Image (tube, rainbow, N blue to C red):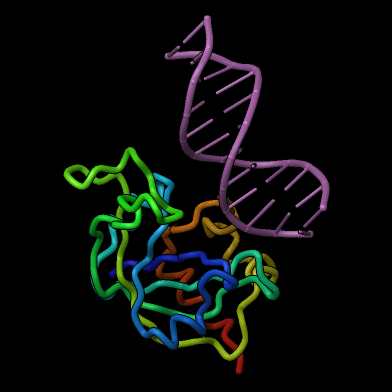
Length: 150
DNA sequence: GCCAACGTTGGC
DNA sequence: GCCAACGTTGGC
């Protein structure tokens, strides 16, 4: 099993909305590295749900992958804001996965807390802050859970 | 709201 | 294939 971190701006889609929906499809990824990461995901992989451009910004909860990568249909729809003419139905450029809500942290584990933890210095989150879908190691995932506070 | 970092595009 | 110009992300 693998671990991941996925970013969302809570104004666009937050952990609360995922809790309400329970299941969602992760559309709109238009970056090749992020897409490749999604293509690597397997059912039951765990996902840290990160709130970017937010206050507080940080990890807001956990989700799991329930459907592996399939074509992102929003890329085919001219009226959708994620429309991309270079993605063809017969040879899609962009993919999405489905995730399911697992839990919402009582308090967001903030970016600051992550930065202040020596064990988490190598997280992709800190090295490549712009990547919206990124791998997390088992050790990092477990350390994050230790930072959860009631 | 600013801007650094980074990815993509397109002219050559 | 290089790289300048441009657009986007996301922390501050």
